[in-house]
Length: 146
Image (cartoon, rainbow, N blue to C red):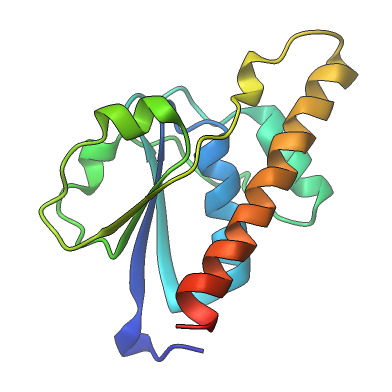
């Protein structure tokens, strides 16, 4: 594990900071603990989606205390990584005056799912599982084998 002096700052960025970025924030915190400080933000703020909280709880990760933040709130933070999780955020992502490594992966927006409550929750679970796999790959590539 990294020493505290090697602690990295990671920003997860999406459009509204309500679902996808919150999922990835939760998994990165679970996987890396105190080795990193994880921030999540949006280019807009839509509030924390209760279904995101629910499907993460089903997988043993509590994100109920997370808040929906605007990216401008973190302009002063020297990020090591900026992870965009939707094409819109990637296109409008502000330029960070740092040496941050910028990575992008577009996940479908579960907040746009339609159908019955169970069908919508299935979409949230599918995206959650994609985000979890991405988080594990990111940690393996950038922290474990680095």
